[in-house]
Each structure stands twice: as structure tokens, then as C-alpha cells.
Image 1 (cartoon, rainbow, N blue to C red):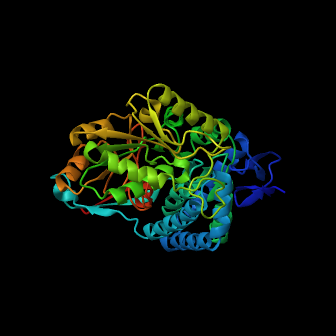
Image 2 (image 1 turned 135 degrees about the horizontal axis):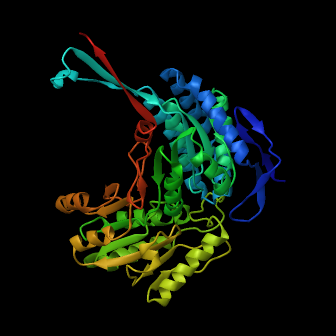
Image 3 (image 1 turned 180 degrees about the horizontal axis):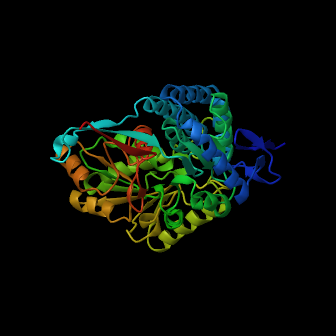
Length: 475
């Protein structure tokens, strides 16, 4: 029997008369239904958030912090329940679903702390000859209703990265979760209501991008849009949003360089996790591994041996490493890309044959930079190994991408590490780690087609405020 979930608007649980089915991504079975909204109900949610903002913007920092801290506690209390939901609706293996629960709780804890740190500063007005006998300072104020549009691959933590800093700053939120993974957001709304969040501060609107997403982006009462998803949708949001703040977390085709002086055992083990966790459906998932030719044979041997140890199958299996793709369309897409690469000369070192909804860990060699698996975002458990002879040339290969989110470099040569920091056109450089490393209080975001702005609680919070300058004339 499928569980029926209602949507949450203005502190009320609503059955809208319409619903969508949520499928277990491994079995295909319908395990839940969720009430959906139309454009008018989305507008009502935005109106509710705008009305709530008038009061919530004045909530003292310690009260906002208490709500966020309690949210973190309740997430952990319901951790196994939420992880099981993520396994089913997102197809994420149990171990990574539990990691997401723990990270989400930590994200809310960081937000609770940042709520108490939000402040302005004094300005030395008399630094100007026109500013004598004046005192100046600025404060940071919440901007209003935040429209948050989130993806399927981290259905709780990427929601947390938008909701938690918004509330920490005193804003209100209209949230549109991905239609394939809406249940985590519904549970979060339940938790935040129990944690004491006033009605109207968080509203969950489930529905299509063309209906709900556009209604959020186009509404002038939404003062900021924060979106995680594809570059194509991000570009459309920029065109439609008008004069308002926009943060875009978009795509990538993450690369990591392996120098011959690196600890190859550690590098290979980390690269395997980074390439195949969540079936490679992570925007910083490792996609391109550039390996110094001097250690190519040894690294490849170690890497493939560890790939073949991965357990593939039902994400609810506690030993599973790689679960299903999010849907049949994505499975067919990546299968086509791999077959195309092989037809163009790439060599399959392992994988490449779907089993039901699971695409196995797939490793390609003899690839070229023009192949889709190299120059586009695979967003799948597919990684390519590419040899290089010159470190500077390898850095140039990383930079040749249209994306620039994060990159990794394994080396014990400090000069090469610092050269990578200087030369790589990305939002984050991970030394002696892969492009996939992230913890939730770091600034996170990319250059080029990888996006606009930065997340990470403190940095997202800053962009969810406006500066108000105060000047006192003492004359």
C-alpha cells in the first residue's frame, strides 16, 4: 500500500486533489503518492511566505537558532526512517543515504550557529574629507521570500543548504523539491513544524518545473531564487527571474590528477568512492582521472581491482555500494554515450552493460577530449582514465572543460600543488583528495557553466541578506 503525503502551505497540510506517484527507483514499485499544486496554489504559498516574513524577519537570532538546532536533533532522531526514504525515492545506497542524513543535520547545526553570528560593522566615515563628524555603520537584513528549487540527487541535504541559511537570516521560503524525490522535503517540513517554525515560514510546493518552478521564478514577491540543477534550466531561470538575486549550482565534469609521487593505494580507493557513490549522480562526481604515465599501469590496476569489489543492487541492502539510476531516460542516455564512445575508439575496462535500472560501475580508457563522456557531464557511474606526460598540459586539459566546479590533485610536490591552485579555473581545488570532497560549511560553487554564487551555510546566508547603511550626522 502506497503512503499518501499531503503538501504543506501556510502551516496547513493540504490534499489538493491532485497527486504524483513516487517510485522505488530500484524495483519500480509505487511506494508513495504526494499531493501536487498548481500555479494558483503556488502563488498562495508565496503570499503566505510574504505575510509570514513581516513577523519572522524580527525574530531574534537566538530563537531562529533554537529552531534550527532542534531541527538538527529531530533529523537525527528520525535518521533511519529518512535514510530508508532516500534509498527508495533517490535510489541512493543505504550507507550514503545515512551519510546524507548526518550531513543534513550538521548543515542545520551550522545554520543555527551562523544565525547568531550575522552582523554588520562600523565604517570610518571620516576617511573621506566629506565625512567629518559623522558616524557610520551597516547592518544586514533578511531580504524576504526565498524561492528554492532543488534536485533529486541529495533530496534532503541540498534542500537543507537552501532552507537552513534562509531561515537563519530571518527569511521565509517557498520550496519546490524535485518531483522524483519530494518525500524528504515533506518530512523536513514536518520536523521543522515540530521544532517550532511559525506557519508560513516554510512552504512545500510539489509539481512540475513548467508550472510550479515558473510560478516561483516569475513572482515578484520572491526576492531571491536559489537553484540546483542543469545549466540549461539555470539559463532559463536567469532569463525569467528579472531583477532579483539568483544563485545557480549547475553542472560539472569533475577531474582529478594523479602524480607519480602520490600514495596510489589511497588515491585509487578514494577515486572509486568519488566516481561511483550515488551511482555517479553527483555534480562533483569524479568523471575524468588524468594519470601521470609513469604510474598509469599501477594506478589503473589498483583502481580496477577496487571497482570490481563494489556491490551493486538494491540500495536498501546495507552492503550496497551502487544502486539504480534515477529513471529509465537517464539510464538510456548514459548507455548511449558509452556505446558511442566505444564506437569512437574508447575501450571498456569494466562495466557498460545495464542490469534492470542499475548501470554498473563503468571505466573507459583510450578516450578523447571530444567524446561526450569527457566533455559533457555524465551524471552516471562512468569514469575515464587518461594518461599524461606533462603536469602543466594536464592542468590545461582540466581547464578545457566548459565547467569549473571542483578539481582534485594527488601529489606530494608542494610546487605542483600550488601551481594547480593558481592555474585551475574552478571553484575548489582539493589537494591529495578528489574533486568530490565537500563538507557543508565550506564555500561551494563553480565557475563558467558550473554556476553563479556560492553555497555553504555562511556564504549562502550572506547572499540572502541586504546591507542597510546607517549614517549619523553629529554636526
